[in-house]
Image (cartoon, rainbow, N blue to C red; front, side, top):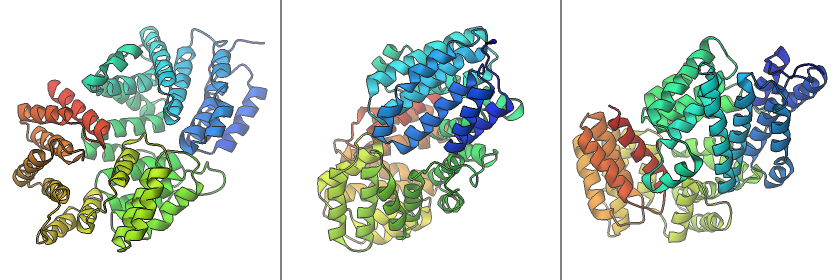
Amino acid sequence: MGQQVFEWSPRAIQGYQYATSLQLNNALKVVEEMKKQEPNNMLVYFIEDYIDFFNLFIGEERTTYQILKGKKDIRLRMIRKGNENSPYYKFCQADIYLHWALVKLKFNEKTSAALDIRKAYSLLNQNENDYPNFMPNKKSLGVMHALIGTIPSNYRWLSNIIGIKGTIDQGIQEIQLALNQAQNKEKIFELETVVMFAFMMLYLQNSPESAWNIVSTSSLNPKTNPLANFALANIASRTGRNDEALRILKLRPKSQEFLPFYYLDLLEGMVKLKKLDLSAEKNILVFLQNFKGENYIKEAYQKLAWIGILKNNNQSYFKYMQNCIQYGANETDEDKSAFFEAQQSKIPHVELLKARLLSDGGYAAQAHRTLINASSIIFDDKEHLLEFNYRLGRSYQMLKNYHDAIETYEKVIDMGENSPAYFACRSALSIGNIFEELKKYDKAITYYEKCLEMEPSEYANGLHQKAEAGINRIRKK
């Protein structure tokens, strides 16, 4: 038996490309070929791990997880037989630990996931010291440094346990270096790095236009790769390009050779709903009928309940909200919010719901018109009044009328600081965003800190992470 190597042979490149475009059966065939034809190429175990990662991370089937989870240690043992002097020796081990950490988080095994993250970080750090110019290492290390820089102070103990230190700026610089090389020399990790960089710009840098520019000018192909389709559609949707998101989703490949990606059906339904297109119901039902995981289920039932309201069918709303309570996990911010609403047993106001959906879709003028028309209705309900002011503030902000936006958001904070709803917390974050854009940094930090002081029953983690990221951005200026 010859030297065990890490070599991106044509077969290895093809296997990796099949795996990252979710053609998992084709990827498995290449892996089997490699084990026969290239038995000394340790990258086969790295590629094989990608196949299981996507299968579990996207499919979320618990029975499949129980079957596959023992393979992590087998692959790590095989990779440790490889050439210790290769930069891929520690990098491949670290990425496998990261894959399984992400999968374990999906299945709510947080302690075990934290231990895997710790091992990955240690390996990546050692590798960075040994091979400072090895760019794939910076891809993984950059994400870890950036995310740890956004952990709110009350969760700092977690970063201490894991042993990671880093900032958003450090992480973004590392990812940018990795991306430059991936686009110019080493094309292998281009898709991964583009997607990571874009989402970091969107969520951590509060730079939606940069995020869209990164994905829309990249080589991501929404027609031939479901992951590329997801990244483009998701970022289009979250940057106010709802019609573009719908166009992209309709391009997604649906043939048998691709791993089913039912979340894209849910995403298409939600994108349609943001334009008040009630054919969204069909897409959401496809997701619920086929998806075998536990996340996004509550969110999906909530959206069906909303369609009931828009159809003036209150009975349908309560039926789906009962399902929202009964089914699915309660881990993601969106599922928590859906569950919180379901527990209230209170129908949202139809005009406020329309304004919410239109705003989420980037249809600012329509949302504002809907609210102005609804302002003639007297809101006896304090919660409806709180929401009305929040949505009005948001429409002012989207229309760049910052004076009225701030004034209205202030009203929301005064009214709802102690409310379990997220409106006041989000209003503080939004005022912080406005002041940051206006380069009034001291005021921005004041409002970001105000956001961190509030603990709403929904969206708290995401709002706090964004506020923490805002503070970090300003302190680096």
